[in-house]
Amino acid sequence: MVDLTNTRRIGALVPATNPVVEPDFYRVVPPEITVHFERMWNGAWGSQAETSADSGHRLSMSSAEANEVETALFGFDITKMNDDVARGASALSNIGPDVLVYACTSGTWHKGYMAYDQSMAKLMEDASGVESITAVSSCIAAMHHMGSRKLSIAGPYRNYHLRNRLKPLMEEAGFEVLSADGAPWMEDSMNPREIDMDPPQAIVDFAVEVAQDDADTIFLPGTAWRALDAAEELEQRLGKTVITVNQATIWMALRRLGWTKPIDGFGSLLRSLE
Image 1 (spheres, rainbow, N blue to C red):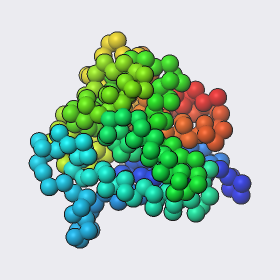
Image 2: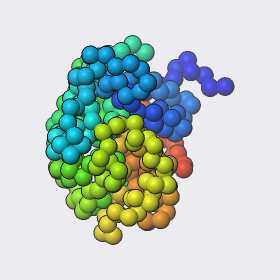
Image 3: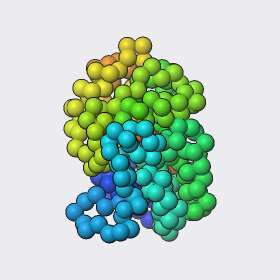
Image 4: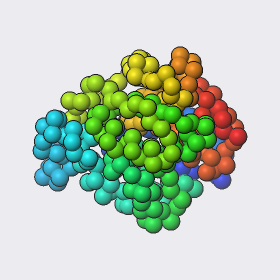
């Protein structure tokens, strides 16, 4: 039995529609550390009855129109979701976490520059008094740790946003982005719950198809995408470093807690904990 009397704690903010982050963290984080979640509201997407309050989170536009609006990655307004961040961080602070995590990639890269991502971490810290990290900054740190220079990005996003928002941000962080491709089904999707429906093998096959030969690293953003289960096979098939957002966020949180024991089965990044 693990003694949790003096355990370390991770607090994580996750979009309300995301069913993947929690099981990923629970599978990877060692039992000596506990993880606690708070959900950020992004509208009624399940079976519950919608109210007038939900309408402000939806975007009244076609999928084609959404392809050129920075906040419209999945049919909801990411800015509105971020309005819930301070409340969520404050709520998580009540359990005394050692670090807080913003477990959503698009919520901080959709503006296209690093300062916005950093401002979200500061917002969490100001609201909670707890050291805070974002999924995006975790991925950047992980890539620098692994010596990444040239990236191929493959994700569950529209090409417009990947190429005009995420690509510039990663270039600002010092990487050369050779390609940025969204899963074809995403071009027409306006439902965030479709992301977690993509099986890991489909992610592997898609990433292999779009990865550039000259890339040293394949970056798989999207915390609701089941990419953690694709990392090991992708590295073996491509002979390249694979960074998935949940893998990198877990890695960063564990490092902040001083955890140094390697973790097998989820790619080379987590085996590099030391």
